[in-house]
Length: 77
Image (cartoon, rainbow, N blue to C red; front, side, top):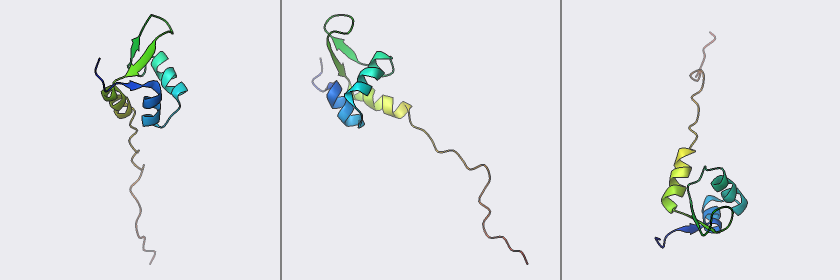
């Protein structure tokens, strides 16, 4: 196993969220991870930093374009 894997706590710290959210993302299959140990809920979860980066990039929200261009200066005379 590569030595640069992140624990759930480390991944949570890097994301700025709680470990509970990281566990939830893993359980829902949204965040790729490795489970070391037995099947089910037992075992240690580790996350590849590249997968964490890909998760962030996939959730980028682009700003919406304004529906109309700005009006600018309007002359009433």
